Length: 247
Image 1: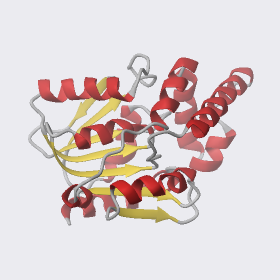
Image 2 (image 1 turned 60 degrees about the vertical axis):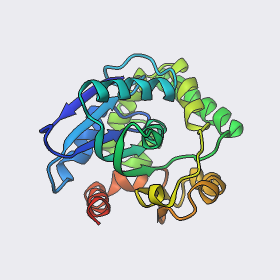
Image 3 (image 1 turned 60 degrees about the horizontal axis):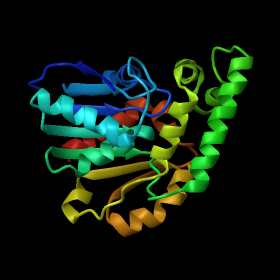
């Protein structure tokens, strides 16, 4: 992990944890212009991305982030935002009693303790895509472009080219194996979940959500794929997050 830090440390701290194929700088550039208020933003490059080393595990990534936060004296956090891969670290941080996390917003998370079929399918799919991209040098993957638009697809393709097969194995294992925990009513009130209606992770998460956080707030984006709404409507999405923070 390589941590990027922006803004005034005296402002409320927001942690932005990016999905696969986005660096910390990428998610910062995407979301920060749309915040109406001033925040101290921490946006890490997770393993396999940006200036970070290899991706080993979510526990390893979270340990590195916690070490950084404690070293900087940051234990009071206004918001932990996680998208897809980023939720794995965000979830662990949210459950850690050593930090006072006021709010968390998680998008596109597969809340299952074990999903071996999806893990195998995701590993196979991503490795096939890497082989295809290595044979055909393109600026943007057609599949990514169809889902997220040309500009985002260019950025994501660039990041994907940097990810190794070993990173893919570890990342897919992380995304399909969650340490679930039953949340208290107070914890559920501080958490919001977001999914696209076309995102298969929501269907696979229903049992885990019903068991561990039955009263958590959930938004389903009709007609959108995995993490698709934030890519298409970033300004409106960030506004909703701030409304949640200040409700």
